[in-house]
Length: 152
Image 1 (cartoon, rainbow, N blue to C red):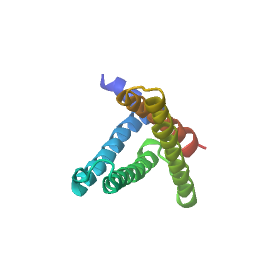
Image 2 (spheres, rainbow, N blue to C red):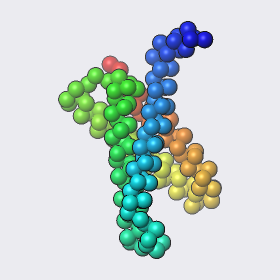
Image 3 (cartoon, rainbow, N blue to C red):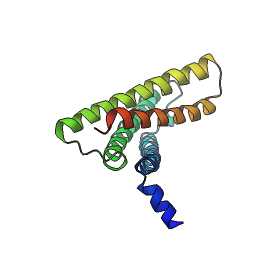
Image 4 (cartoon, rainbow, N blue to C red):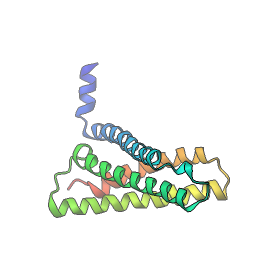
């Protein structure tokens, strides 16, 4: 059994996908931890629904959580998943490509497809959110693998 696991781990593509899933889960935890820590500390529930204060707190928490989780994902993807050794300008290029891909996945899936599915088509938001998360993970993996951290 151990030899089979070692053989699978020796396969670079298998190792990469497993490590990507692990750090993807950790990235999600970073996002949730930041979001819930901020909302707990700032207390948006003290303000009425629809108020500017409530919207500001919730949006600030969501944006901060997204930024910190994207930074965490970049560092872990660069170092542990795709094992990129780019330095200086190469690393800056990777960062901007990574950030661009994450912004694109957010716009395409979390905003566009989510809103069309939920509001125009009337599909249950929980089902759509689950599907969007799966599509985002797949999109982000392929963007990272073949665009951001592609092997030369």
